Amino acid sequence: IRVVSPPRFFLRIAERADMTDDALEKAKLASLSENLVTTLEAVVSTTEDRLDERAEMVESVVKAAAEPDSGEFLVPLSAERVAAMREALADIESPDLDEGFLSTVDAWMNKSHQDGMDGMVAILQKVLQLYAGVEIKRARARLQASVGAAVSGQSQGQADEVVAEQEKGETPPAAALLERLMDTDPDSWDAELRRSLAAEQEEGGVSSQAIMGEVQRTIEGVVLGLENGSMAQRVQAEYLRELVTRIEALEQAV
Image 1 (cartoon, rainbow, N blue to C red):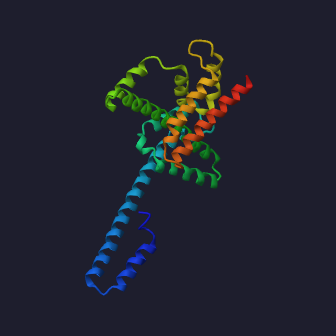
Image 2: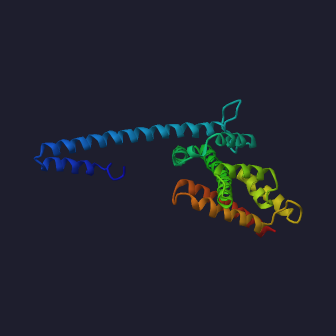
Image 3: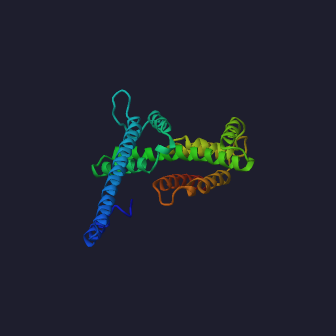
């Protein structure tokens, strides 16, 4: 699409049509131009429809931030509203949480900033944080399943069943902590980290080195596997960098 969409491309077709005296060649070039225009119109229409769908999805998540009784947005958001937003996000399948979804959030955030709607900017930032937590957790599960399939030589479906069984059993403390953090509002990360790091010597306790290692493995296995320079990669990388910063700050405070 990038190759044929610039106006110059169509001008070249017109120039070639003007340069030839062959009626058949002129007809072929005219047909080519018409087919390309039809194709581009279909692509643009599909893209617009997809963006409209993504806008509806973003709206559903933002609506979950509103107080159920009054419909007002109260910032900072309560734990109940954040949980409702996470639930709304979790109801959206991963293929739909794509660049179109993220671009819509970004566009709404920029517009809210321009309009001086700081509260809505904060809510949309929360959407991105919750998105990162949901998608990273899903990606970790998919990665575990795919690795299990590769190692065991099983089909992906069989590996998924094995992973489901493993999830019912013991999970390494650092992995369990990271999973909890993915389900936790980043505003509450410090409290969760303090509890786990303070209980390092106890059963279920986690050292800062262990959780940092788990985060690093997630960056390497999940974030670096995303399309380079994509919004998904930027948002998820920023989310995990913030977590690393929090862990390092707690280490220094000890």
